Length: 209
Image 1 (spheres, helix red, strand yellow):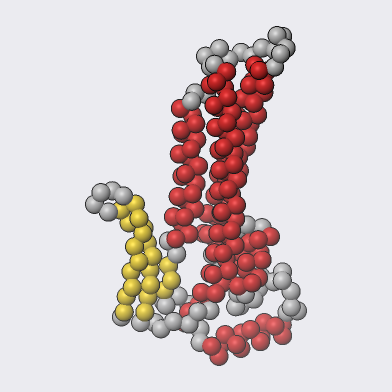
Image 2 (tube, helix red, strand yellow; image 1 turned 120 degrees about the vertical axis):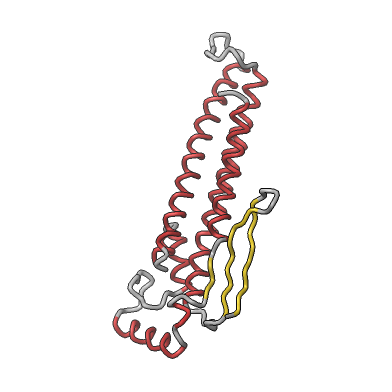
């Protein structure tokens, strides 16, 4: 492991933030979906029918109309579960892939931090019998690596916390949008794009039919 590894590690953590933001900002809100075509009377009748058929419980996946509070609770309990409750299975896959990447980076960074921490403590102690097999790094280099991986461990923890909160917020908002009544002649779409300078970004398209 060289000092260049710290730069690569930093870019990898930045990639996690970008991937999470990219997939969650490319949400499509359209009046053409089946859920938005349900009128208020039908939604009310479905809720009454479901409530009479099944006892009230927070653990209920067979409701015809998703509850935003229940969706948020599921995602807070187990990340991705709220997306499954909303029947947005592709989002659940993204959630699990994101948390898998965060977990992998966390394990890797913690191991590397502990490794260089042990070597650093061995070099600065007063015991002459303490040695290590690393000869290409000075004590200052080892200290830099130790501090770097500790910092990236903290960054990874922050990335995981942000992804967890986005997971809950997405499940809650998506459940709201499933019962949001909008005219069939109006659509709003957010999508990624790359400009002439090859810089990534997002654009919003608003259409009237």
